[in-house]
Length: 506
Image (cartoon, rainbow, N blue to C red; front, side, top):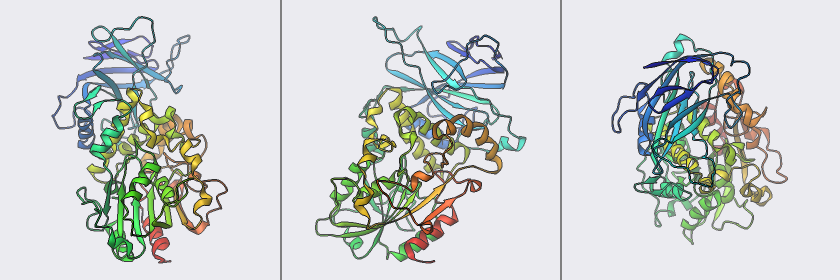
Protein backbone atom coordinates (compact mmCIF):
# COMPACT_ATOMS: atom_id res chain seq x y z
CA UNK A 1 0.00 0.00 0.00
CA UNK A 2 1.34 3.44 -0.96
CA UNK A 3 1.09 6.09 1.76
CA UNK A 4 1.22 9.84 0.90
CA UNK A 5 3.76 12.08 2.63
CA UNK A 6 2.73 15.76 2.88
CA UNK A 7 5.99 17.36 4.07
CA UNK A 8 4.84 17.86 7.67
CA UNK A 9 6.10 16.15 10.79
CA UNK A 10 2.80 14.30 11.20
CA UNK A 11 3.56 10.57 11.58
CA UNK A 12 1.92 8.18 9.11
CA UNK A 13 1.64 4.43 9.41
CA UNK A 14 3.44 2.77 6.49
CA UNK A 15 2.81 -0.76 7.82
CA UNK A 16 1.25 -2.14 11.00
CA UNK A 17 3.42 -0.90 13.85
CA UNK A 18 5.74 1.15 11.56
CA UNK A 19 5.28 4.94 11.73
CA UNK A 20 7.19 7.47 9.65
CA UNK A 21 7.48 11.23 10.24
CA UNK A 22 9.11 12.70 7.13
CA UNK A 23 9.21 16.41 7.77
CA UNK A 24 10.32 18.31 4.66
CA UNK A 25 9.61 15.42 2.27
CA UNK A 26 6.62 15.20 -0.06
CA UNK A 27 5.74 12.15 -2.10
CA UNK A 28 4.98 8.52 -1.38
CA UNK A 29 6.18 5.74 0.90
CA UNK A 30 5.44 2.04 0.80
CA UNK A 31 6.62 -0.91 2.82
CA UNK A 32 7.39 -4.47 1.78
CA UNK A 33 7.88 -7.52 3.90
CA UNK A 34 11.51 -8.44 4.46
CA UNK A 35 12.85 -11.38 2.52
CA UNK A 36 12.99 -14.69 4.30
CA UNK A 37 16.46 -15.88 5.43
CA UNK A 38 18.20 -17.99 2.81
CA UNK A 39 16.39 -16.53 -0.21
CA UNK A 40 18.42 -15.03 -3.03
CA UNK A 41 17.85 -12.59 -5.86
CA UNK A 42 18.60 -9.22 -4.32
CA UNK A 43 15.05 -8.38 -3.32
CA UNK A 44 13.16 -5.31 -4.45
CA UNK A 45 16.22 -3.14 -3.85
CA UNK A 46 18.45 -5.41 -5.96
CA UNK A 47 21.05 -5.93 -3.24
CA UNK A 48 24.21 -7.68 -4.37
CA UNK A 49 25.31 -11.11 -3.10
CA UNK A 50 28.14 -9.38 -1.20
CA UNK A 51 25.66 -7.42 0.92
CA UNK A 52 23.19 -10.29 1.23
CA UNK A 53 25.85 -12.74 2.36
CA UNK A 54 27.46 -10.28 4.79
CA UNK A 55 24.10 -9.60 6.44
CA UNK A 56 23.37 -13.30 6.63
CA UNK A 57 26.80 -14.08 8.11
CA UNK A 58 26.28 -11.37 10.71
CA UNK A 59 22.91 -12.79 11.72
CA UNK A 60 20.99 -9.73 10.47
CA UNK A 61 17.52 -10.47 9.13
CA UNK A 62 15.48 -7.96 7.14
CA UNK A 63 12.01 -7.57 8.65
CA UNK A 64 10.82 -4.62 6.58
CA UNK A 65 11.88 -2.69 3.49
CA UNK A 66 10.52 0.86 3.18
CA UNK A 67 10.89 2.79 -0.06
CA UNK A 68 10.38 6.54 -0.39
CA UNK A 69 9.82 8.37 -3.69
CA UNK A 70 9.98 11.96 -2.48
CA UNK A 71 11.17 15.47 -3.13
CA UNK A 72 12.28 18.02 -0.59
CA UNK A 73 9.91 20.83 0.40
CA UNK A 74 10.23 23.63 2.98
CA UNK A 75 8.96 22.60 6.43
CA UNK A 76 5.89 24.38 7.72
CA UNK A 77 6.54 27.64 9.59
CA UNK A 78 6.63 27.10 13.31
CA UNK A 79 7.22 23.35 13.15
CA UNK A 80 10.01 22.18 15.41
CA UNK A 81 12.73 20.75 13.14
CA UNK A 82 13.61 17.06 13.39
CA UNK A 83 17.37 16.63 13.81
CA UNK A 84 19.75 13.69 13.85
CA UNK A 85 22.27 13.38 16.72
CA UNK A 86 24.77 15.07 14.37
CA UNK A 87 22.46 18.05 13.85
CA UNK A 88 21.35 17.15 10.32
CA UNK A 89 17.78 17.36 9.05
CA UNK A 90 16.15 14.06 9.94
CA UNK A 91 13.15 11.84 9.46
CA UNK A 92 11.81 9.63 12.25
CA UNK A 93 10.96 5.95 11.93
CA UNK A 94 9.31 4.07 14.77
CA UNK A 95 9.32 0.25 14.68
CA UNK A 96 7.85 -2.41 16.96
CA UNK A 97 10.11 -3.41 19.83
CA UNK A 98 10.59 -7.17 19.66
CA UNK A 99 11.90 -7.62 23.19
CA UNK A 100 15.20 -8.02 25.03
CA UNK A 101 16.54 -10.83 22.86
CA UNK A 102 16.56 -8.79 19.64
CA UNK A 103 18.15 -5.51 18.56
CA UNK A 104 17.32 -3.37 15.53
CA UNK A 105 19.41 -1.38 13.08
CA UNK A 106 18.24 0.56 10.01
CA UNK A 107 20.39 0.61 6.89
CA UNK A 108 19.42 3.73 4.94
CA UNK A 109 20.43 4.44 1.34
CA UNK A 110 19.64 7.79 -0.23
CA UNK A 111 18.74 8.53 -3.84
CA UNK A 112 22.36 8.61 -4.97
CA UNK A 113 23.70 5.66 -3.04
CA UNK A 114 25.10 7.21 0.15
CA UNK A 115 24.68 4.68 2.99
CA UNK A 116 24.11 5.34 6.69
CA UNK A 117 23.77 2.85 9.54
CA UNK A 118 21.22 4.02 12.10
CA UNK A 119 20.92 2.85 15.71
CA UNK A 120 17.82 3.21 17.86
CA UNK A 121 17.67 6.15 20.22
CA UNK A 122 18.66 5.23 23.79
CA UNK A 123 15.77 4.35 26.00
CA UNK A 124 15.16 6.97 28.71
CA UNK A 125 16.25 6.13 32.24
CA UNK A 126 13.26 5.85 34.55
CA UNK A 127 12.83 4.72 38.15
CA UNK A 128 10.52 1.97 36.94
CA UNK A 129 11.78 -0.36 34.21
CA UNK A 130 10.26 0.40 30.82
CA UNK A 131 8.63 -2.70 29.37
CA UNK A 132 9.84 -4.10 26.08
CA UNK A 133 8.02 -6.26 23.59
CA UNK A 134 4.35 -6.04 22.51
CA UNK A 135 3.15 -2.44 22.34
CA UNK A 136 6.59 -0.87 22.85
CA UNK A 137 8.47 0.88 20.04
CA UNK A 138 11.99 1.84 19.04
CA UNK A 139 12.73 5.23 17.49
CA UNK A 140 15.28 5.98 14.77
CA UNK A 141 16.23 9.46 13.58
CA UNK A 142 17.67 9.13 10.06
CA UNK A 143 19.40 11.71 7.86
CA UNK A 144 16.76 12.94 5.41
CA UNK A 145 18.97 14.80 2.90
CA UNK A 146 17.43 14.59 -0.57
CA UNK A 147 20.06 15.07 -3.31
CA UNK A 148 19.18 16.15 -6.84
CA UNK A 149 17.70 13.51 -9.09
CA UNK A 150 20.50 11.60 -10.86
CA UNK A 151 20.66 11.69 -14.65
CA UNK A 152 18.83 8.87 -16.40
CA UNK A 153 22.13 7.19 -17.28
CA UNK A 154 22.99 6.98 -13.58
CA UNK A 155 20.03 4.72 -12.87
CA UNK A 156 21.96 1.71 -14.10
CA UNK A 157 25.00 2.33 -11.91
CA UNK A 158 25.27 -0.45 -9.36
CA UNK A 159 26.94 -0.78 -6.04
CA UNK A 160 25.89 -2.89 -3.07
CA UNK A 161 22.31 -1.63 -3.39
CA UNK A 162 20.34 -0.53 -6.45
CA UNK A 163 17.19 1.60 -6.64
CA UNK A 164 19.16 4.76 -7.38
CA UNK A 165 16.61 7.59 -7.38
CA UNK A 166 14.64 6.49 -4.27
CA UNK A 167 15.31 6.44 -0.58
CA UNK A 168 15.56 3.03 0.96
CA UNK A 169 15.19 2.02 4.62
CA UNK A 170 16.10 -1.59 5.41
CA UNK A 171 14.89 -2.50 8.90
CA UNK A 172 17.16 -5.25 10.19
CA UNK A 173 17.14 -7.27 13.39
CA UNK A 174 19.78 -9.43 15.06
CA UNK A 175 19.85 -11.55 18.22
CA UNK A 176 21.54 -10.05 21.27
CA UNK A 177 23.29 -13.39 21.82
CA UNK A 178 25.12 -14.99 18.92
CA UNK A 179 24.63 -18.74 18.63
CA UNK A 180 28.39 -19.39 18.36
CA UNK A 181 30.08 -16.32 19.85
CA UNK A 182 27.91 -15.50 22.83
CA UNK A 183 26.44 -12.16 23.99
CA UNK A 184 27.00 -9.08 21.81
CA UNK A 185 29.08 -7.14 24.34
CA UNK A 186 32.61 -5.83 24.80
CA UNK A 187 34.18 -9.26 24.17
CA UNK A 188 32.22 -9.85 21.01
CA UNK A 189 34.75 -8.37 18.55
CA UNK A 190 37.51 -10.51 20.01
CA UNK A 191 35.41 -13.65 19.72
CA UNK A 192 34.41 -12.75 16.17
CA UNK A 193 37.98 -12.06 15.07
CA UNK A 194 39.28 -15.24 16.70
CA UNK A 195 36.81 -17.19 14.57
CA UNK A 196 36.74 -15.16 11.34
CA UNK A 197 39.98 -13.08 11.31
CA UNK A 198 42.55 -15.20 13.15
CA UNK A 199 46.20 -14.23 13.25
CA UNK A 200 48.12 -15.59 10.31
CA UNK A 201 51.58 -15.12 8.81
CA UNK A 202 51.61 -16.36 5.22
CA UNK A 203 53.76 -16.26 2.14
CA UNK A 204 52.49 -13.74 -0.40
CA UNK A 205 53.62 -14.60 -3.90
CA UNK A 206 52.14 -13.55 -7.27
CA UNK A 207 50.37 -16.89 -7.74
CA UNK A 208 48.52 -16.91 -4.41
CA UNK A 209 48.35 -13.42 -2.88
CA UNK A 210 44.60 -13.20 -3.63
CA UNK A 211 43.82 -16.66 -2.31
CA UNK A 212 41.96 -17.14 0.96
CA UNK A 213 43.40 -20.58 1.71
CA UNK A 214 47.12 -19.80 1.87
CA UNK A 215 48.82 -22.00 4.48
CA UNK A 216 50.47 -20.31 7.47
CA UNK A 217 54.19 -20.00 7.93
CA UNK A 218 54.79 -22.38 10.83
CA UNK A 219 57.64 -22.47 13.32
CA UNK A 220 59.83 -24.33 10.83
CA UNK A 221 58.94 -22.16 7.86
CA UNK A 222 60.70 -18.92 8.78
CA UNK A 223 64.22 -19.88 7.69
CA UNK A 224 63.93 -18.84 3.99
CA UNK A 225 62.89 -15.31 4.99
CA UNK A 226 66.15 -14.69 6.82
CA UNK A 227 68.44 -15.10 3.82
CA UNK A 228 68.28 -11.41 2.86
CA UNK A 229 65.84 -8.47 2.97
CA UNK A 230 62.21 -9.64 3.00
CA UNK A 231 59.05 -7.75 2.10
CA UNK A 232 56.12 -7.66 4.55
CA UNK A 233 52.54 -6.59 3.71
CA UNK A 234 50.33 -5.18 6.50
CA UNK A 235 46.63 -4.66 5.76
CA UNK A 236 44.29 -2.05 7.23
CA UNK A 237 41.10 -1.87 9.27
CA UNK A 238 38.26 -4.32 8.48
CA UNK A 239 40.52 -6.03 5.94
CA UNK A 240 42.70 -9.05 5.24
CA UNK A 241 45.91 -9.45 3.29
CA UNK A 242 44.24 -11.19 0.34
CA UNK A 243 41.50 -8.55 0.25
CA UNK A 244 43.38 -5.37 1.10
CA UNK A 245 46.10 -5.86 -1.52
CA UNK A 246 44.04 -7.61 -4.20
CA UNK A 247 44.10 -4.44 -6.31
CA UNK A 248 47.84 -4.77 -6.95
CA UNK A 249 48.42 -6.18 -10.46
CA UNK A 250 49.93 -9.64 -10.75
CA UNK A 251 52.82 -8.13 -12.74
CA UNK A 252 53.68 -5.86 -9.80
CA UNK A 253 53.60 -8.76 -7.38
CA UNK A 254 55.80 -10.80 -9.71
CA UNK A 255 58.35 -7.97 -9.87
CA UNK A 256 58.41 -7.66 -6.09
CA UNK A 257 58.76 -11.41 -5.62
CA UNK A 258 61.70 -11.48 -8.02
CA UNK A 259 63.37 -8.48 -6.35
CA UNK A 260 63.16 -10.13 -2.93
CA UNK A 261 64.02 -13.63 -4.20
CA UNK A 262 60.61 -14.90 -3.09
CA UNK A 263 60.98 -13.56 0.44
CA UNK A 264 57.54 -11.92 0.51
CA UNK A 265 55.09 -12.47 3.35
CA UNK A 266 51.89 -10.96 4.79
CA UNK A 267 50.54 -10.66 8.31
CA UNK A 268 46.81 -11.03 8.93
CA UNK A 269 45.96 -9.47 12.28
CA UNK A 270 43.04 -8.33 14.43
CA UNK A 271 42.06 -4.72 13.71
CA UNK A 272 39.00 -4.35 15.97
CA UNK A 273 39.64 -6.00 19.33
CA UNK A 274 43.41 -5.50 19.71
CA UNK A 275 45.60 -2.44 19.33
CA UNK A 276 48.67 -2.28 17.05
CA UNK A 277 51.04 -3.07 19.93
CA UNK A 278 49.33 -6.41 20.59
CA UNK A 279 49.36 -7.12 16.86
CA UNK A 280 53.11 -6.49 16.67
CA UNK A 281 53.90 -8.47 19.81
CA UNK A 282 52.04 -11.49 18.41
CA UNK A 283 54.20 -11.40 15.30
CA UNK A 284 57.44 -10.85 17.21
CA UNK A 285 56.67 -13.81 19.46
CA UNK A 286 56.50 -16.10 16.40
CA UNK A 287 59.94 -15.25 15.02
CA UNK A 288 62.41 -18.00 16.00
CA UNK A 289 64.97 -16.98 18.60
CA UNK A 290 67.93 -17.79 16.34
CA UNK A 291 66.63 -15.94 13.27
CA UNK A 292 67.28 -12.30 12.40
CA UNK A 293 64.97 -10.61 9.91
CA UNK A 294 65.49 -7.48 7.84
CA UNK A 295 62.19 -6.17 6.50
CA UNK A 296 60.81 -3.68 4.05
CA UNK A 297 57.12 -3.01 4.68
CA UNK A 298 54.17 -2.02 2.48
CA UNK A 299 51.30 -1.06 4.77
CA UNK A 300 47.81 0.26 4.22
CA UNK A 301 45.85 2.41 6.64
CA UNK A 302 46.03 1.17 10.25
CA UNK A 303 48.63 -1.43 9.20
CA UNK A 304 51.14 1.43 9.19
CA UNK A 305 50.77 1.77 12.96
CA UNK A 306 51.70 -1.90 13.34
CA UNK A 307 54.73 -1.22 11.13
CA UNK A 308 55.81 1.62 13.38
CA UNK A 309 55.74 -0.66 16.42
CA UNK A 310 57.79 -3.26 14.56
CA UNK A 311 60.25 -0.52 13.61
CA UNK A 312 60.84 0.31 17.28
CA UNK A 313 58.80 3.50 17.63
CA UNK A 314 56.77 2.38 20.62
CA UNK A 315 58.18 3.67 23.88
CA UNK A 316 59.30 0.74 26.02
CA UNK A 317 59.40 -1.81 23.20
CA UNK A 318 62.50 -2.32 21.08
CA UNK A 319 62.07 -5.40 18.88
CA UNK A 320 64.91 -7.87 18.85
CA UNK A 321 65.84 -10.11 15.92
CA UNK A 322 64.04 -7.75 13.56
CA UNK A 323 65.16 -4.63 11.71
CA UNK A 324 62.79 -2.57 9.61
CA UNK A 325 64.71 -1.03 6.73
CA UNK A 326 61.97 0.74 4.72
CA UNK A 327 58.27 1.48 5.25
CA UNK A 328 55.80 2.60 2.57
CA UNK A 329 52.81 4.20 4.31
CA UNK A 330 49.68 4.08 2.11
CA UNK A 331 46.82 6.13 3.56
CA UNK A 332 48.13 5.51 7.09
CA UNK A 333 46.62 7.58 9.95
CA UNK A 334 50.02 8.47 11.36
CA UNK A 335 48.45 11.54 12.95
CA UNK A 336 45.21 9.65 13.60
CA UNK A 337 41.76 10.10 12.12
CA UNK A 338 38.78 11.77 13.75
CA UNK A 339 36.65 8.89 12.51
CA UNK A 340 38.24 6.68 15.20
CA UNK A 341 36.85 8.82 17.99
CA UNK A 342 34.05 6.90 19.75
CA UNK A 343 31.62 9.69 18.82
CA UNK A 344 32.40 9.18 15.12
CA UNK A 345 32.72 5.40 14.81
CA UNK A 346 29.30 5.22 13.17
CA UNK A 347 30.53 7.79 10.64
CA UNK A 348 33.52 5.55 9.88
CA UNK A 349 31.17 2.66 9.18
CA UNK A 350 28.96 4.88 6.99
CA UNK A 351 32.02 6.06 5.08
CA UNK A 352 33.38 2.58 4.41
CA UNK A 353 29.98 1.21 3.37
CA UNK A 354 29.28 4.20 1.10
CA UNK A 355 32.64 3.77 -0.64
CA UNK A 356 31.76 0.15 -1.33
CA UNK A 357 28.33 1.17 -2.62
CA UNK A 358 29.43 4.09 -4.78
CA UNK A 359 32.74 2.80 -6.11
CA UNK A 360 32.89 -1.00 -5.74
CA UNK A 361 36.45 -2.30 -5.55
CA UNK A 362 37.62 -5.72 -6.62
CA UNK A 363 35.84 -9.02 -6.35
CA UNK A 364 32.74 -9.94 -4.39
CA UNK A 365 34.89 -11.36 -1.59
CA UNK A 366 36.58 -8.01 -0.85
CA UNK A 367 33.24 -6.29 -0.28
CA UNK A 368 31.78 -9.17 1.67
CA UNK A 369 34.72 -9.44 4.07
CA UNK A 370 34.75 -5.71 4.71
CA UNK A 371 31.00 -5.63 5.30
CA UNK A 372 31.15 -8.56 7.73
CA UNK A 373 33.62 -6.62 9.88
CA UNK A 374 31.52 -3.44 9.61
CA UNK A 375 28.41 -5.35 10.70
CA UNK A 376 30.28 -6.78 13.70
CA UNK A 377 31.05 -3.24 14.88
CA UNK A 378 27.48 -2.09 14.17
CA UNK A 379 26.14 -4.83 16.43
CA UNK A 380 28.54 -3.80 19.20
CA UNK A 381 27.65 -0.12 18.94
CA UNK A 382 23.99 -1.07 19.06
CA UNK A 383 24.75 -2.78 22.37
CA UNK A 384 26.86 0.11 23.71
CA UNK A 385 30.08 -1.93 23.65
CA UNK A 386 32.57 0.69 22.38
CA UNK A 387 35.09 -0.42 25.00
CA UNK A 388 35.59 -3.65 23.10
CA UNK A 389 37.10 -1.88 20.08
CA UNK A 390 40.64 -0.80 21.07
CA UNK A 391 41.90 -1.68 17.59
CA UNK A 392 39.79 1.13 16.15
CA UNK A 393 40.17 3.69 18.91
CA UNK A 394 43.98 3.32 18.71
CA UNK A 395 43.68 5.62 15.68
CA UNK A 396 42.26 8.53 17.70
CA UNK A 397 44.36 11.67 17.04
CA UNK A 398 44.73 12.45 20.75
CA UNK A 399 44.48 8.88 21.95
CA UNK A 400 46.82 7.10 24.32
CA UNK A 401 48.30 4.80 21.68
CA UNK A 402 49.43 7.53 19.28
CA UNK A 403 50.83 9.55 22.17
CA UNK A 404 53.14 6.63 23.02
CA UNK A 405 54.67 6.47 19.56
CA UNK A 406 57.94 8.36 19.17
CA UNK A 407 59.40 8.94 15.71
CA UNK A 408 62.87 9.61 17.14
CA UNK A 409 63.23 5.99 18.25
CA UNK A 410 63.50 4.56 14.73
CA UNK A 411 65.36 7.06 12.58
CA UNK A 412 67.23 4.24 10.84
CA UNK A 413 64.11 3.22 8.87
CA UNK A 414 63.49 5.02 5.58
CA UNK A 415 59.90 6.18 5.15
CA UNK A 416 57.75 6.74 2.05
CA UNK A 417 54.15 7.84 1.75
CA UNK A 418 51.21 7.62 -0.65
CA UNK A 419 48.38 10.06 0.02
CA UNK A 420 45.20 11.25 -1.66
CA UNK A 421 42.92 14.27 -1.58
CA UNK A 422 39.63 12.70 -2.63
CA UNK A 423 37.45 14.79 -4.90
CA UNK A 424 35.84 12.53 -7.49
CA UNK A 425 35.18 13.39 -11.09
CA UNK A 426 32.63 12.28 -13.65
CA UNK A 427 29.49 10.54 -12.41
CA UNK A 428 30.51 10.71 -8.74
CA UNK A 429 31.42 14.41 -8.65
CA UNK A 430 27.95 15.84 -8.09
CA UNK A 431 27.15 13.03 -5.71
CA UNK A 432 30.01 13.71 -3.33
CA UNK A 433 29.53 17.47 -3.48
CA UNK A 434 25.87 17.19 -2.54
CA UNK A 435 25.97 14.30 -0.09
CA UNK A 436 29.16 12.93 1.39
CA UNK A 437 31.08 16.20 1.23
CA UNK A 438 28.48 18.60 2.60
CA UNK A 439 26.61 16.26 4.90
CA UNK A 440 29.34 14.03 6.33
CA UNK A 441 32.90 14.77 5.32
CA UNK A 442 33.01 18.49 6.07
CA UNK A 443 31.34 17.95 9.43
CA UNK A 444 34.17 15.67 10.56
CA UNK A 445 37.31 16.94 8.80
CA UNK A 446 36.38 20.58 8.28
CA UNK A 447 38.37 22.02 5.40
CA UNK A 448 41.22 19.51 5.73
CA UNK A 449 41.99 17.44 2.62
CA UNK A 450 41.41 13.72 3.12
CA UNK A 451 40.93 10.41 1.30
CA UNK A 452 37.47 10.01 2.93
CA UNK A 453 38.97 8.16 5.92
CA UNK A 454 42.39 9.67 6.73
CA UNK A 455 43.51 13.33 6.55
CA UNK A 456 45.94 13.75 3.66
CA UNK A 457 48.62 15.57 5.62
CA UNK A 458 48.24 13.18 8.55
CA UNK A 459 49.99 10.46 6.57
CA UNK A 460 53.18 12.55 6.50
CA UNK A 461 54.01 14.28 9.82
CA UNK A 462 53.94 11.90 12.74
CA UNK A 463 55.58 11.58 16.13
CA UNK A 464 57.39 14.26 18.05
CA UNK A 465 59.96 16.31 16.15
CA UNK A 466 59.47 14.27 12.99
CA UNK A 467 61.80 15.46 10.21
CA UNK A 468 60.16 16.52 6.94
CA UNK A 469 59.73 13.72 4.42
CA UNK A 470 61.61 14.41 1.16
CA UNK A 471 59.22 15.13 -1.69
CA UNK A 472 60.71 12.36 -3.84
CA UNK A 473 59.51 9.90 -1.21
CA UNK A 474 55.86 11.01 -1.50
CA UNK A 475 53.24 10.09 -4.08
CA UNK A 476 50.34 12.53 -3.89
CA UNK A 477 47.11 11.69 -5.71
CA UNK A 478 45.51 15.00 -6.63
CA UNK A 479 41.79 15.81 -6.21
CA UNK A 480 41.00 15.33 -9.90
CA UNK A 481 42.25 11.75 -9.87
CA UNK A 482 39.37 10.53 -7.69
CA UNK A 483 41.39 8.20 -5.43
CA UNK A 484 39.76 7.30 -2.12
CA UNK A 485 41.06 5.35 0.86
CA UNK A 486 40.25 1.93 -0.60
CA UNK A 487 41.52 2.46 -4.14
CA UNK A 488 45.25 3.15 -3.91
CA UNK A 489 46.62 -0.21 -5.01
CA UNK A 490 44.78 -0.48 -8.33
CA UNK A 491 46.47 2.69 -9.57
CA UNK A 492 49.44 2.30 -11.98
CA UNK A 493 51.28 5.16 -10.25
CA UNK A 494 51.25 3.16 -7.01
CA UNK A 495 52.94 0.20 -8.70
CA UNK A 496 55.50 2.49 -10.31
CA UNK A 497 56.41 4.12 -7.02
CA UNK A 498 56.65 0.83 -5.16
CA UNK A 499 59.08 -0.39 -7.82
CA UNK A 500 61.10 2.83 -7.64
CA UNK A 501 61.31 2.95 -3.86
CA UNK A 502 61.80 -0.72 -3.11
CA UNK A 503 63.63 -1.96 -6.22
CA UNK A 504 65.47 1.18 -7.31
CA UNK A 505 63.99 1.25 -10.82
CA UNK A 506 64.16 5.06 -11.13
